[in-house]
Length: 175
Image (cartoon, rainbow, N blue to C red; front, side, top):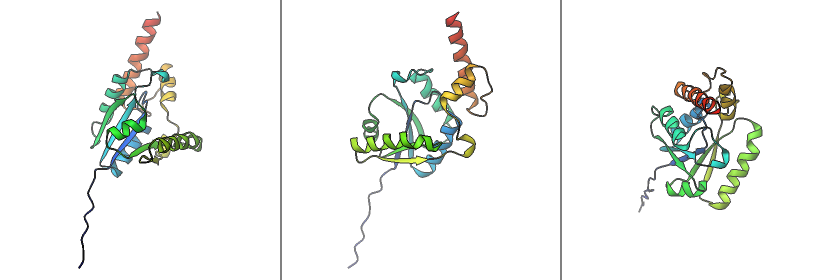
């Protein structure tokens, strides 16, 4: 007699963590790639004041939400816990991390190894962006925008506007 076993279909949820201060086209490239692989992608915006972000957590979540509004099955949430705890709270198993260059690998490998040690159910998936986005980082975008350089090819328009407004308000505070 032939037995049919049905495997319980579970939703594949991936967490893409970071500070996203601000979200860049490189981040969005990885989100779009991850969305093709997973049923749901949660962009986990870190509420880590030790990183001294330019934008508040709520502002970063709003910027991410607006940037991803047309990408199905993607949402942003903030978190202020160990990543593995957030992953477990979302019934996820996968963590998405981007690798821009070989120099990213050692740090990302350490994080993935630590996360696996903390919770061996967490799998880290490394994705690489398009070559045009390899060099883009949030810190580079902040630096260029601070000096009013053209960041239009690095970030969505609403992020470019938000950065200009943020720098203007900070300069007014300093006056």
